[in-house]
View 1 (tube, rainbow, N blue to C red):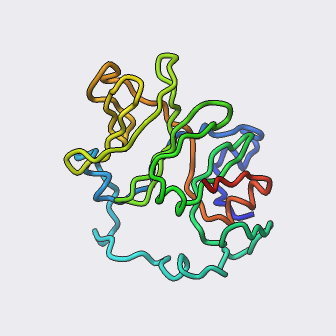
View 2: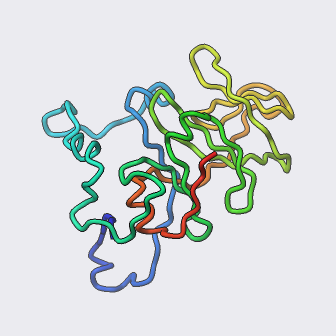
Amino acid sequence: MNALVMYDQQAVRCDLLGESLEPIPLTMTTWERWVEEHPDTIALEKVNGRYTSDSYESYYRNNLATDVIGQSNSDDRLRNKDLVLGVGFEEGAKAYPFEVLAAARVIHDDILGEPSVVYFDDTADTAFVFKSIVDGQELTFDLVLDNDQDILIDRESGSKWIAFTGTAFEGPFEEQNLERVHSTASFWFAWTDFYPATDLFLG
């Protein structure tokens, strides 16, 4: 399987056998885009103090290279190295191709039995999933550009939400936060190795 295997001394001694780490939402984005929203961020610096290049560039471009152990499950619905956003880790696995997300920017869908909204940030090629129910009300969002920033406006209340964070800054829902849904960006071949029965959203 294509996966990073982590271990600690307690796990090696089997003290924690069968335990699971709690997943938390993550954001895969560019440094420039991140500091726009979080200007006080502290960053880990490499020894030489510079991030000048990505040593995996050729790997990204090579559609045939699928890690050192190859594929466990071949699925030709997408190309091996197509990026997808995956949701539903315990049940109901589903993948959203980045190409589809980039074209739509905002997608309303039912995820794990709950109304949700998927937003794609085309300035940094990253995506977020939020539950679209707030205070018991299901919201429908439209995407607008406001002062060079993506804003979601819900049709039900007219509240404005920062799309990158899911925080309302104007309207009846001001200071409310949309709940993040656990998701991950992955190469298609890696996602289908873990979730061979995954649904694929094609719009």
